[in-house]
Length: 387
Image (tube, rainbow, N blue to C red; front, side, top):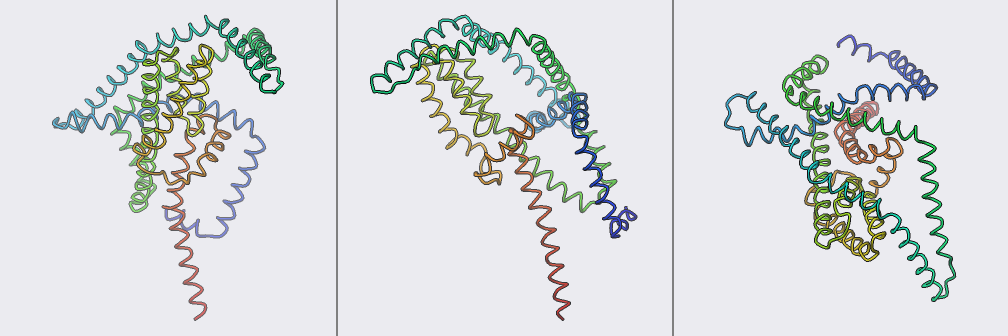
């Protein structure tokens, strides 16, 4: 480490390092497709391990809660940890069984009903177009709305032709989905293995870190990592809880008013509510689309409820869950979501806000102190030169 610091202090090392970085950057840009393919291949190979690490990270607070609350009287630390991991595993299995038993049959029934009644829905849609054309004609607006009906039928015909002509691609996509499901299953197994071996893994990581970083820098890093950890857990935990609350409220509303496709639409609303800003709009539009095919009045009631629940969610539920801002100005939220979507698709949209909050912390905790020290050093040097 001392030799490395002496090299770093020499001017030629900085120029050499900058030249190497420039060459590496040029090579990456020149071979960008190959680099992207290599990254995708590596990620596909490591997908179960990455999923396992994420699973262990997200389930660790649940396991720690069980350790501290339910097994606090157990003297052995390993016994408390094992009990917490086992209870976490049982909880996840119960949730999966509940989804399979309660939700899947309702979803299958809703989708089956939608497919079975599709022709009648199209005829109702034709009637709506004709009525809309007549209504617009009465108020002096001449628009041939009925052409939209033929447009819908042509679009459906094109969709059927697309399915026929791209059967191989669809089968490959189905195979990719199956591979993804298998990776998720293996990743869950890895996640519980990592969670069970948490103490050992953390010990190894700490030893490796202390071999390269002194205690003072390690303490600073601990402070930063703790802040990042709190951001991720609070953001994703509160986001999932908020989506669950909105989804359950939607399900209860639709069951009380006996609206069709209640489980399907409630699930869509809950999942899309995870997406920041634009997600609730997508969920509301999809839900209204399914309902307007059945009865337009049902879609109207659903839209009114969706606006009310999102207003309540934005003014009451989310402020109580998040308990303040992540340190990002509200005007930047939409910009970050768009940039995240451009860079990494749906994953980028979900991770844009917490990563931006982490960058704000890194800026405040690392860059600002260094800039202040540099400013003090420059002021001190200029003061000595004046003397």
